[in-house]
Structure formats: structure tokens, C-alpha cells
Image 1 (cartoon, rainbow, N blue to C red):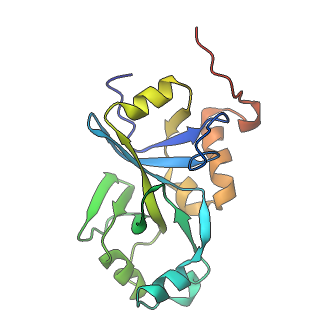
Image 2: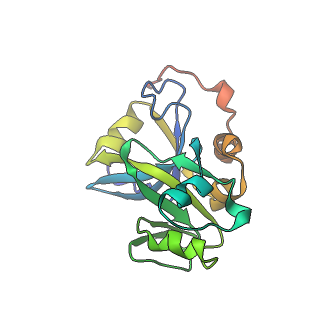
Amino acid sequence: MDTVNLTHNFLIAMPGMVDPNFNGTLTYICDHSEQGALGVVVNRPIDLDLSTLFEQIGLSLPERLHKNMVYFGGPVQTERGFVLHTPPQTFSSTLTVHDVISLTTSKDVLEAVSQGAGPQKFMVSLGYAGWGAGQLEEEIKQNAWLSVAADPLVIFDLAPEERLPAAMKRLGIDFASLSEEAGHA
């Protein structure tokens, strides 16, 4: 477990997850190394739509995007925006996670969206999920998370409430059949 790299994987919170920030969540891991991990929760919309967010930061928004929701990305830096999007575009502060998905934290991605020149598919969140060195590996050992290879279609093409079940289906597991108790052989 010490050498696993979960970059471009989903983390599925197990039913016994007691942290309310992560109970029932699906988290996309954007970076995982020996220094720690960074991810974005992708299935928890907040009571804020893109139209209101763009208005707050002084940008216009194409009408077709007005009802798109902003997401709770995690409990770290909740005042800061994190944009998961499809490539090939890069911006001032873009991390290419995989050849099919990038993470941008600079405002220029939102400016591009405002001008109709942004990424084809994107999701805006406030905050992120972070783990220190070895912390995520320890939580996995304690049965807090399941991991599965990520699929951008789950993030960008499904409704928020469909994302966790779709990730579980990738594992061949029905979420309702999971136990809250950890088992150890």
C-alpha cells in the first residue's frame, strides 16, 4: 500500500465514514505522492449556481450555463475555486491530472468560460480535500475509502446524485450492500 499512487482515481467514502465533510461522497484524486494527496469532491452541489458565482466575481456567464451548480470540493480553502475540466486548454495555474482531465485554480479559466472560450466540459467547486503524507493510505487501511479508476464521464456527464452509484458500478458493487464494519483477515 505504501507505493500506491491514486492520482486519477475516485475515492468512495465507505458507509461508516463519520466525518460529515465526506459522508456519502465521491472524491476525484488530482494528485497523490509521498507528500500527501489532493482531491475534489464531485457529488456534493452547494446552494450556489454558476450564474450567482460569476456575478459575485464580476463576470458574465453564457445563458446555457446559468443553472449549473457549484460544488463543495472539500473542507480545505473553501473560499477558493477549483475547476476540474477537460483539456487541452491550460491556464495560469493548471495541473494536468491525466490526459483527459485537468485542475485549474486561477481565475483565467472562469474568464475564458465567461467569454465562451473555456473548456468544453468543466465543474466548479469551492474548497478541496487534502491529506498529509501517509494519511490517505492509513485511512484506506482503516476501511474509510474504496478506490476505483476514475472516468471523466462520471464527473462531467452524470447528475450529481448518479455519480457515486456509477463509480460503485465500476467496482461491480452495490453501495447498499456495503457494511459499516471493517473486516480484517
